[in-house]
Image (cartoon, rainbow, N blue to C red; front, side, top):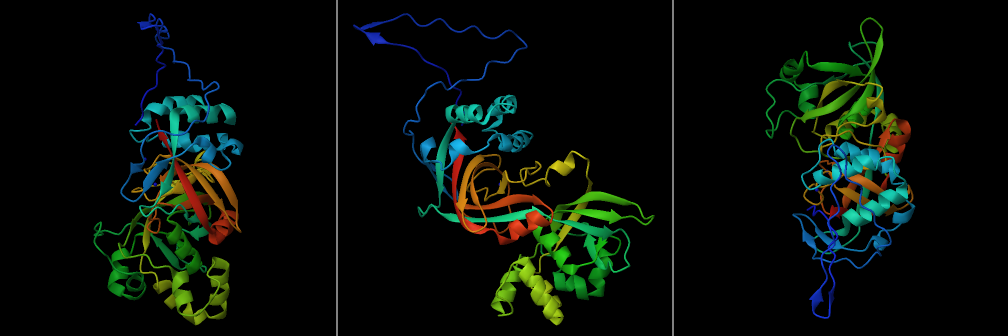
Length: 381
């Protein structure tokens, strides 16, 4: 969920103990015009210089661009929108680059790569113990049907933040909310909408946001986003891991869990209550433009499918461009991504959650993704 040294060409030659006169300075562009973008020319991909960089949860080791697998083959233009989004709220280190990033939005991938080679230094991200391989998972934005009023099979409430909730102070658990009349009384009137399937509601909370097509009391429908607002400050426990630990199912993908619960409906409540954390939401309208992007991540910018990742910000700062490489049974990924989000389970140096997009196809991809991972942070020179 992260110093720029401006560059200049210094020309000077020493010969016969005499120094040639300095090259006249290049005139500044006229007022109101932009300086030309730097060009790489034929500068070779030389060995990196400089020390490793230390962060709270990681060490960054400088490498050559040639060490990034697949770098010359990526359609980097597909990642540029994500980078421009990061420039809406840029970290101080990257802010000086944002004008150039925007101007390169229509450049070719090769031009973008040339610019990155000139402006950035790649660093291999490692844990403090020196291992280089970590774990890649994936998340998505679900899309569900909901009703503004309870009834007709829609009995599962989705809540906005209740009054009296205090940040960093544990509130009632999921079981408390479901069983205690006094807790339900505190939540009365805070329902945003009602869903039909408690498993869908749980997935919505685990993902942290979602799109819902809400049917209003007059029968009209509108698409909106339920965005993360707060939690009950209880620890997150994986329901799938709970089911596996109980010996109840070996398939902890969501299709496998649904199949097991369909065959064992009496275990549904225990399954839900195994995760005491509850997420509260806020309602956001979705414009036509908003539908092309995901929810806002921890950096505060909208996520881009396939080009945004959640990271441990103590390892990789928000807004950092990252080279990601992962190969496994679900996908082979070698691509430029932006560190724009985080999550409670995303901790450690080489750890990322890949934003797959929204809807059932993205949900299936995210539900199966669990592969080895390598990461390289791309940091200003």
